[in-house]
Image (cartoon, rainbow, N blue to C red; front, top):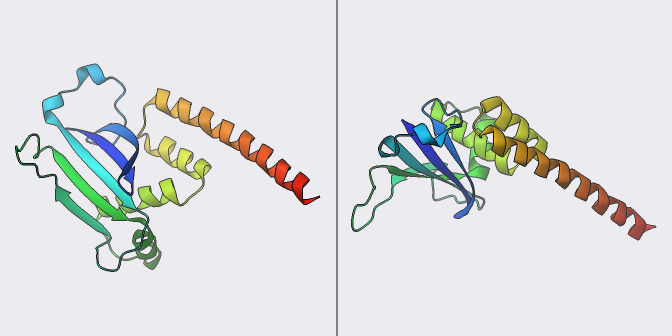
Amino acid sequence: MNYYVFICLDGVPVFEIFVDKNYKAIEQFEKVDWNQTKYIILDFKSAYSKKLKVIEKGEITYRQKVLTKQILYFRIDILKSQKELKKNQVLKLENKNLMEFGIVLFLKSPSHFLKYIKKKKIMRKKEMENMEKAFVNQIKEQEILDTWKNIKKS
């Protein structure tokens, strides 16, 4: 079983990953049995809502029932999940992993996210290299912006 995972923030796709049953990145797409692949949409919500649960799971329904058994939808409230993890409430392992992933991705620093992705091996090597390059560029750009802020203040 393989999982094609689309990560979204408030309904907007951020990036996608393709992992095996152990949630490790699949490097070679040629050997994939696409009929056995599940499609998962992880929609992380940034707005706090008292009415909704921390994680809600559902299936995509469609009038013509195309691939609906292969598509799962998870809505994860980032702020609620952070509060629940801080309380150390007993959670299912799958739910805890989803909650931690959202917090690392959206609330922690980019370097923390890169370390997490490398440790879990959920992205392909080429994608990881590209992300590391982008991170190095982001650090350089941030340094330039910080120097301009200091010049403006003086």
